[in-house]
Image (cartoon, rainbow, N blue to C red):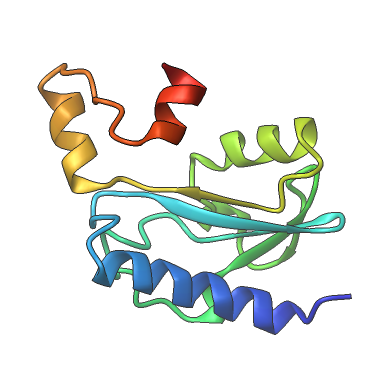
Length: 126
């Protein structure tokens, strides 16, 4: 069994690292981890209100049906529905990072296709 505090702390550290390196911006994104029948989810507005400077006590822990075990379910990110869908349909997935990379948002806002720049990407999505 994994230590609950370590998972919660790791989510905070990864979020801050992604933010500090410019992989996500303050407009959104969220992180979750699945450990057995528990799901750990970052709170909503972690970027917008906190620039990903959050502590482990803010991470919400639920069961696979989104019933809270630790934390306030009202603070869970609205995009958590996608996370739970992934966990329920792909049991091998243990973590989900939903990011809002600034350069990707620029392409999307301009309705431009994002070119595949690596051989791996071209093989998978064309």
